[in-house]
Length: 345
Image (tube, rainbow, N blue to C red; front, side):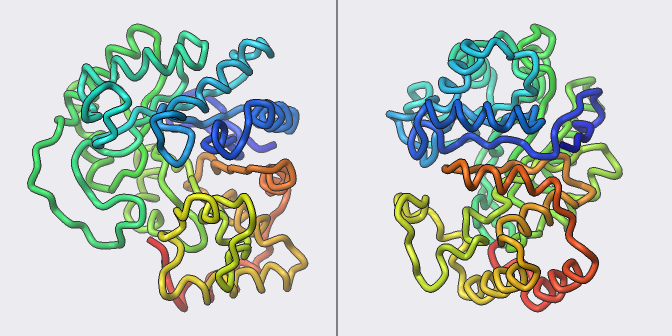
């Protein structure tokens, strides 16, 4: 396994991060345990979860993934060996969290961390992330353009002050963002510097062969401000494996079960996915291996958050750390990309 620094901290995290959002719906607790055991045996020391999980969001399963991880910690007795990241829900109308609209204010964040710690059966979280901004912006396949909504939002300084209190109390070690924009990240950095508040050490955004918009505007923060990317959806919700080509709906797959793949079903996507799948076949490589390896190799990526519902999928994803794409393959990837950049932003 390869390890990289988490931002400007002294923490070394595995380049492969174990994503967990299917545990509690698509995966049982027993399967979650099997995945964690295997990942740790392969050198993975970084787990990512959220109070929102499992996915898709439902009142009956909210928090189930954290509970599974907490039960695993209790049975294995190895909490100290894992760098644990979780998230607090941003502004939303999902009122089952705390009986009202979720916001990134003092009351919500304080209650959220307390509940997460109980489910995780730990007294601290290594990385606490804001799952999405409090201010309303285009998210989760909202396209490349910014659309302004003239609504009030919790001030970034106020959010950071709450997080600062949690750091001082020892409940969280570091702060991260997720689904954030260049403006948002820069404002968090500025507020932290001006008011001596916790600095953001990472951003968790989508990044894959179909969506490389992080390279424009966000990737520079890694080099200038030591804020790296925790890349989620490296397989574009499984679409880059080719399993959904020609309208296929494999049994048990997320899009088959929940119809949540619209982000990766744009007009141009099918043709581009087919090109990447064929390129992988040209090199006698599993398409998932190629897609994950591409993400692993980016210098601004701190960790690649892989996810799997089967052990076969997990082994391919974790094993991608040992695969390096050669210059010819990378050149052909760029040719496909420039022919139709970011068909699924």
